[in-house]
Image (tube, rainbow over all chains, first blue to last red; front, side):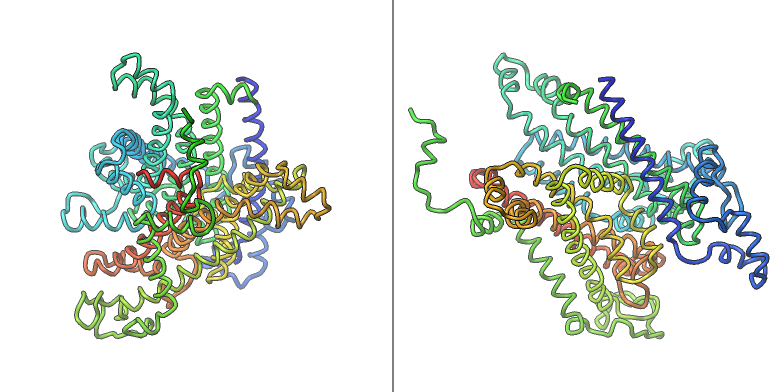
Length: 318
Length: 300
């Protein structure tokens, strides 16, 4: 097991190096001159000497590989540069916004689990009944519906017609916990829907497969109650493939944060990243891409480890 | 007593369970897939025949009738510039359907080629291609497409390139898996033994075995591509105004949600309908193309 984990960690680190290089190249491909764009508001951009000086200050006059080296060493030291538009330190901007997105992320995952897992189990147990069809249909809809449309429908029903939910806005948790939860209820639900649908579908098919196996028949044959059979014997092996889906859905939830934070006016990392893409704010885009990929890599790594832990065959094989 | 499975083997079959006809028969037995297929054909029809179907030209403003609700003249109402919403939604199908189709076709081509190459060649080629696949898969799709499309600039071609550069990854992984499964099969060995070239073996003997999962991947990929295109358009990346597109329509309409809800709800409904149909069709095709499931379908 230790060897297995070690191999996975090394693999992830190598991937991280590749991803960092790719993001660096992608960000350098962004057209337009960020320095001129940033200076437009306050400095006379007609003066080439000033432009040159500012460019040198940001290290943008160096060849690309030198820029990469400078950026990487700075990044590892915790110096993520300064925003080209606001002039703030990228790290402090990140720390200020991280708790917001983290809260959305945790609650969205919570929604996905609390809806997806029980619904998947119920539809497997009530296979081919109207309840099953209803849940299966609902989960396909959950997978297909784009977050922005779901958000609009929910805002229209709960904020415009019923007026029981705020249409947008955000209050920090430590300022007013009740208001905070009230604000994030809808956005996190929307963020979690897709993952919930995928989870329910996956659990259904996985549980159905397990329920058809010999050891379940044995458990029933020796006279165990249906509850014990399902919850003690069937659920654990059925959850093994589900672990992968949980890990994979994280990337999707993160992607959804971009749209959701914009629509609900939530000042999180997604909003910052989106603004940065439009203003060509290199340092922020770069840091954002690295943080996101690091996040997904860690999620994948944990998934692999959990998988190996739950399924002894994988541990032994590798 | 004979084994029922063996007995079945020797029973004369009236209908074959393999081949194109059997696939179509199973597909048509699932009502949902048929409904999905009809909706898809309908949406493509809208896209192709938009000038004939749409009651008004989509880019013609009418400043006396701005943000009006549904009426006999304008079934869905008008937008912020007084343009007929129904016409704009109908024309919007063009962008989404074109981008969806183009992305799926290019992703399939690129992914199949690289997947075949990786699986068939193995060694360093395999390592390089599959590590690239792993790296791209790390990014959330929408964010990858957004940054790339922003780098490439606005326009339909660029959004197609961006989505394709993300979409080929899943296809390549799928094809490589299939290739690995059949690479050592006797018929591939036989093809090599009679002197078939690398390319011939790859495309004539190995590739046909990947078609079934690829068809399913194509249907699901279409849904994914439409979702990404509309998502990017919603965020303002991709096709630029005044060209009508569902994602942009939705974004503008969102601002006027309290006054004219149909402005954003109508294009969103079509986006959801399109993606839902592609997903359902993909599911149906998966069941129809899997020979193991074909017998079961009858019993249900």
